[in-house]
Image 1 (tube, rainbow, N blue to C red):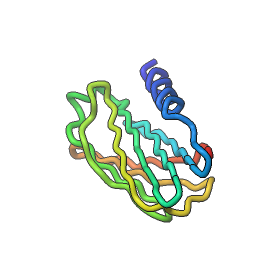
Image 2: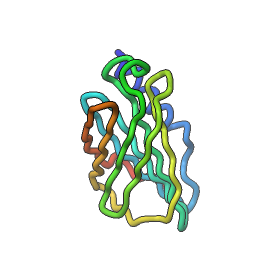
Image 3: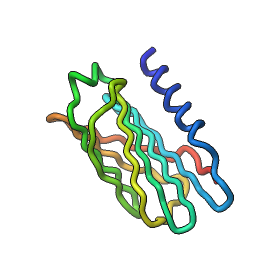
Image 4: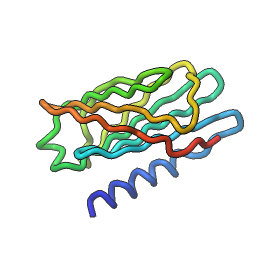
Length: 131
């Protein structure tokens, strides 16, 4: 039931973030591990690229279990790394802006999440290219 609620919230976030205007491209990757559900969004607009990662902790009560979270997203043309703490509902959202990289649909992106003394690798699959 908790996973259904989390997936519904993530879908709502995806839909509420708006469409792409002419010339924009939006790429979505998703994946799930034992402790995390992840969505990675890349929005390209001309020469600028906005990356955002939404991590949702699904293993146990996040306030007691997680602490600081570090993540690394690696794909053939770049990387996105950061850290932060979860919100009360177990979600971490990070955003970065940089130069546009050539991303081709169908790629798989590797995400590594580290918290406390744990580490989880999640393969994020290309879901859609909107634009």
